[in-house]
Amino acid sequence: MSRTLHLGVFYTGVGPQLLWTDPTHAPHTEIDTFVHVARTLERGLFDAFFLGEGLRVRENRGRVHSLDVAGRPDAITQLAVLAGVTERIGLVATQNATYNYPADLARRLASLDLISGGRAGWNVVTTDNAWTGENFRHGGWLPHERRYERAAQFVDAAKALWSGPDTVERATDLVTLRAAATTPKSPQSRPVIFQAGDSPGGRDLAARHADVVFSAHSTYDEAAAYADDLRARLAAYGRAPDSLRILPGTSVVLGDTPAEATDRAQWIRREQTTGPRAIAFLEQFWGKDLSDYDPDGPLPDIEPTDGELDPSRGTLPIEWRTGKLDRIAQWRVLAEAGGFSIRDLVAEVTPRHEGFVGTPGQVADEWARFVGDGVVDGFNLIPQLIPGTIDEIVDRLVPALQDRGIYRTEYTGTTLREHLDLPRP
Image (cartoon, rainbow, N blue to C red):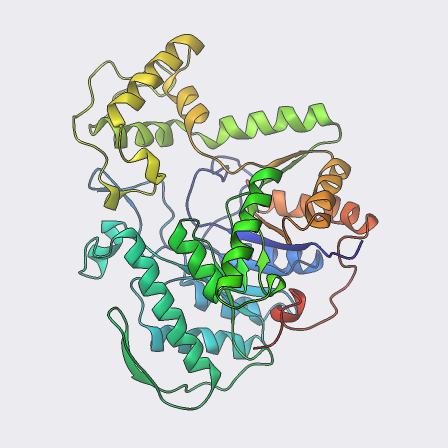
């Protein structure tokens, strides 16, 4: 097979995908945890380690969301430490284009790229939630598509700064600067640019600027449709179809038999929905304090507030931000029919990444089909347990991929751009 599968791991800072209550879950703010993960991924010949980051802990109904992680170091600082204890794996920092400043962030990312020997990447994200904006005295200051307009102008300015020694001037409606690069180029020239937005604005941003897309489409049909759409957008910007790598975010659940893997996946889904998280989820829709309700009991017997969800104060899908009362009515019917508790219902209706479930051989065969047909270039894996999921993937799934000839048996380059087989700018 001519195609090689590319793999990354997305180490998130928040969210329900992690089994926080498992006693084997490593401390989430200690550097030893990150060192172990990065070294294990390097042993597994992964392309990259993605570090998620938020600029402020989230809120729920105006209060700090106690289920978030606080105390984790700045992503670029943390990856700089990991650059010193690894040799090959790419180090990708999630950094916000809404609230950072282009010249400052470009310099910090170029510094990471230089000290890592050309292994840095930038996962470009935008933010619309008001609690982050308030941290910068802006509030929810940019509508959805305008955030992507700023991001495109921001990335354009950063790439110009990385391209040479000349002074860069920009005076657009959302980005204004006059600056020059102060950091030498790395062996890969500039950081690899990753992008994770899926709206029309996000897809256009990826087609215009990204080297790698971290997409949300991991079923075959969705991935194929997404790849077709994105490659058409690439052509509109004069880019070749193979100038962009597509790595959907997904999860993996392995078992010695298909039945064992299925049982384990069902157990993981249940454990990911803790009682406090289920209550906090419903509070967004009810608009009321539900802390007195038993998460393993029936749905709240009180009526929700009339107002829709505030789109600037949450991270739920856009299509969930209207029609709240109808959705709650549907949930009541679903809970009644299925005998669901609050926790059961939330586990049932919460949007999740589609994952791959099976034996190592089954998952490897499925991935071979995806990459062989060209619908993806690889996957960005979202672990459920740190470090257990990562250890298992490296020890059990990677050999199966190598046996099928779709995964490297050694690193052939030293930079992230070389791992991804991307052209040098």
